Length: 149
Image 1 (cartoon, helix red, strand yellow):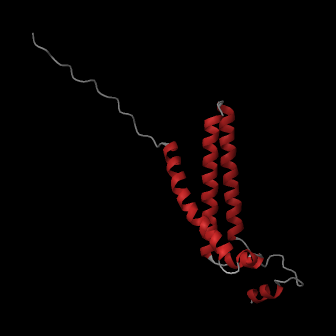
Image 2 (cartoon, helix red, strand yellow; image 1 turned 135 degrees about the horizontal axis):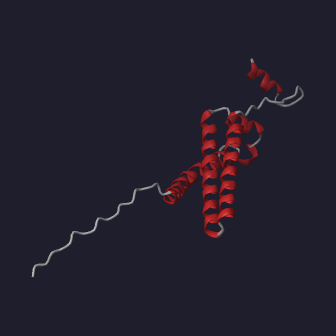
Image 3 (tube, helix red, strand yellow; image 1 turned 180 degrees about the horizontal axis):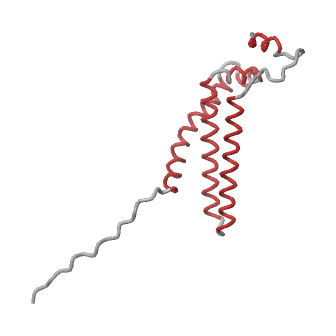
């Protein structure tokens, strides 16, 4: 009696799709590390360098936003913090909201709120004009007149 071995059945191969949960998990770790550097740099410059908290006023912010470096620093911090927070809230919603429709509505609301805040925050940083609305009797009038020339 001869024994014949049957050829193994072909294994069905799944097409690899992007795993959004894995990408979200990796983003949270990477953005968390970058946010630590950005936030502590922000706190150091604003609170410890120079005169500390007593130096923070409108002129201080205007001076910071006059340079592209600080504009991009704050925008990057804003983007990462909002996306990081929205992704964390999405994870909580996915874990605790069991019904499909409310879960989808909440996830969409989180995404829209984060997108709106990112757009508005970015516009504020890049279109910040310290001379907008300064009156002749204001403290910034002479500075703005000098900038306009």
